[in-house]
Amino acid sequence: MATPTQATPARRRRAWLDIVVFGLAGGVLTAVLTLTEYRFLVVEHSVAIYGALIAVLFAGIGIWLGVSLRRKRADAVEPQGPVSVAFSLDESRREALGITARELEILSHMAAGLSNQEIAERLFISENTVKTHASRVFGKLGAKRRTQAIQIGRAARLIP
Image (cartoon, rainbow, N blue to C red):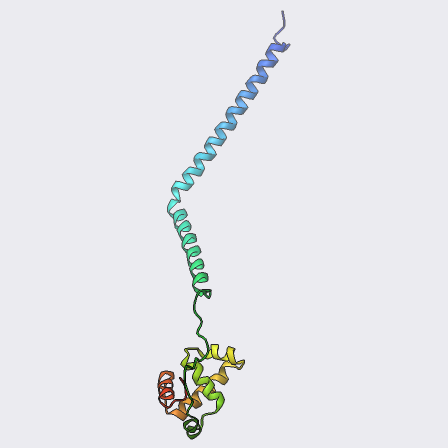
């Protein structure tokens, strides 16, 4: 018979089995405690987590809306230059008012609904030059606003 100090193969096997079982149990217990701690953290700070998620969602929506609204639409109809349908310019009236050909061109683009920047891009001049010509047209026609200048220009048969 074996003495208690000597280990038999069955005892060794049993010792290894105990070590593996207790090791696995310890690992599972550690994982469960970590998961419980994580869940407690989520439950404890759920309002802050949900607030952060909502803030990220609204920031994303805001960025998407900003980009999509600022983008030029491909299907938008861009106003074209002045269209003349059986229109004859009253040259004597134009000369009497002292309006130059460039000022008349600026006025006709304003009548087409273009902004100062769009007019500048089409005529390859600066926006300040467009503003200068426009203010001179206003002065020569006695107008205070674009719409008033367009009305007077049409009445005087300067633009269609």
